[in-house]
Image (cartoon, rainbow, N blue to C red; front, side):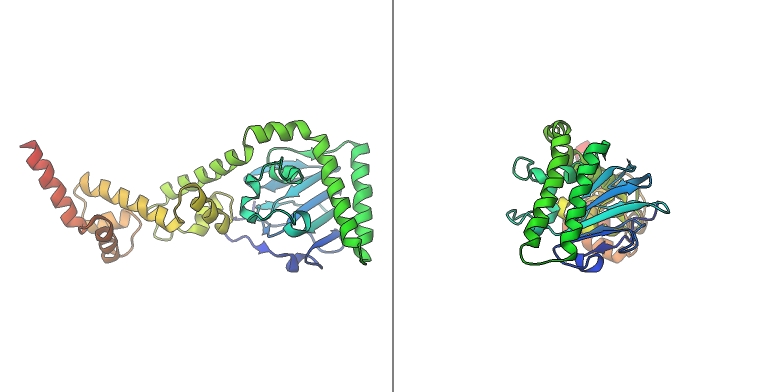
Length: 307
């Protein structure tokens, strides 16, 4: 597995010939074989060559006759083997869902009753879309029609292509209606988000003393993009990443100051501050007293209570 700390995020203009919809096979453009994200939706259709897909924090099988549905900004990778045959379909949010005024970061929270076409994308981390031969052949017919129309665009082609795309997604939705409903009832997307935030929280706890602790590194540990993590933190706890880390560092500093006799400089270092003066200044801003005076004041209070 490649490092997730510096994965690229692609726009449609970087991986597609058009800004709304683009379909190609493995000969049209080399497959991206490293972890990456993109700002658009993607569907991959495996026409030959068993492999796996890395999606979010999980790995799922991706054999022949399988489809992969990838949300915008979702970390993913499909290492296609040599001589594999596949189709890639890229399309923008406005192409698929022009009526849905929704931040791409919030797509996982959209009810499947409001946008059922989002179902396979929302639940890809929980399901494998491996179809029987007859169902897969019906998908392939739609894919071929989309490709033919996209190659010779004219007035009305865009609308027909969108109709074919919705037919493809609709067929998958009918085949997986029961697990989709069950996952929606179980709030699978919310559970996935909680798991990701839990991984981020554990990473911050273990690396709190590291002055180089950053949003990028914590997001990589959570298998999220920095933008995605920032968005979720604001929605879930109402804080930025920097505010969260500072809060935890100040809590650790208070515990160290009151629970031992370590010099202020060492306390600063253990809490991830390379500069003691900066640590003292931030501590004073939050607690009203510099660290040393804070410790003495609390000891005096405890002494007076004990006597």
